[in-house]
Amino acid sequence: MYKARTAWLFLIPTGVLLLTFSIIPAIAALGLSFTNYNVFQPIEWVGIENFSRAFSDEDFWNALWNTFYYWILVTPALIVIPVFLAILVNQQLMGIKVYRLIFYFPALVSVVVTAILWTWMFKSDGLFNAALHSVGINPVDWLTDKFTAMPSLAIVTVWQGLGYYMLFYLAGLQSVSKDLYEAAELDGAGFWAKHIYITFPSLKPIIFFVTVISTMSAFKEFTLMLTMTAGGPIGSTTTLVYMIFEKAFTDLEMGYASAVSTILFVIILILTLINKRALDTTQQ
Image (cartoon, rainbow, N blue to C red):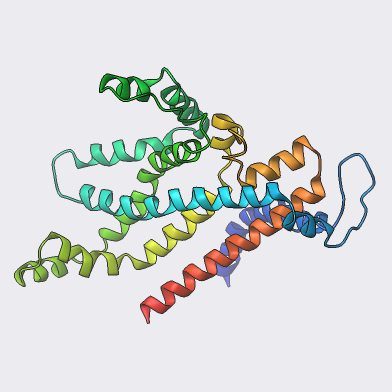
């Protein structure tokens, strides 16, 4: 009884914060999605009009495509590459902790600072075009061309997220028994065989966790679009979250923005359930 009361005392502050800043606003947004709330006029119930408008809105479909495009560019890289980084820094070498810190360092940098740094490197006279010019390649309009803007943002996201997700895999690797690797070596297994048959199966729960977290992060990414491209050029980096921001705080269409937010929530929920189903099927 005493332990249960103590546990509840520790949980109450977090629960209050979660209720205040996440659950209640989410419920309020769901309610507003059925209204025409625009800050200045009284709220009127409009039913599913906002949802009907979204599905017939060309800007919505463009933002949805950009969101999935960004997710496809970012998430597979953040699932696969950190595994190999974790394997690399899991070796017993002198100074290995320094390498771990170097890989993790980008995760410690503010997203805004990261955006400013990479915007400078992506400029027409920036670091990358200077490097291309030095080897005789024409400069690239990294952030001002509709075909290269989104991949450029994806590069920044992957660069900043590698070290963060590497830590999850590293924690998982250190729980894998070394006896398994030694037995595999005695059977003649090489580098790839050991990791394909031992490492990856052992990391399945972590791979699922990273898949879910990186998917949610990709669908919620907003700061890079705001600070590096402002949704452009020609809407090529306008994702659903950026569209929600514009509709809510520029156009003051709170009801429509809430409806798009609800659709985004449903999409993320469906993707998470698919990931979980895939993991359960694999484990069976």
